[in-house]
Image (spheres, rainbow, N blue to C red):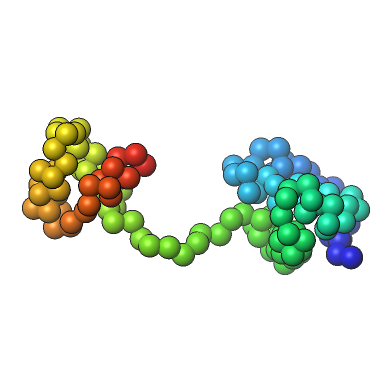
Length: 130
């Protein structure tokens, strides 16, 4: 059985605040898991509550033990970098607003101005994201 060491009053208040007002659902869920563990709930009960694997809960508890609240935040994941920078994405948005039904022409203008090619689907994705 794996439990979190008894919490100090400051740690408990920090966890409760993160659970109630954390900026992301991931942080709120992990903070509640740590808080439940400190109250004596088993990993399996917490895993059943959140519909995750017991090892996932164990990882959350390990992160709390080693890094504290900072460890409960979601870390950046690897992935393909965006095709356009935020400034370029704004330019894409303006181009598409000027001629929304002529994406091929927008593609050509972006090629001339930015030197980057993008499919129509990529243009749609950039517009949708912004």
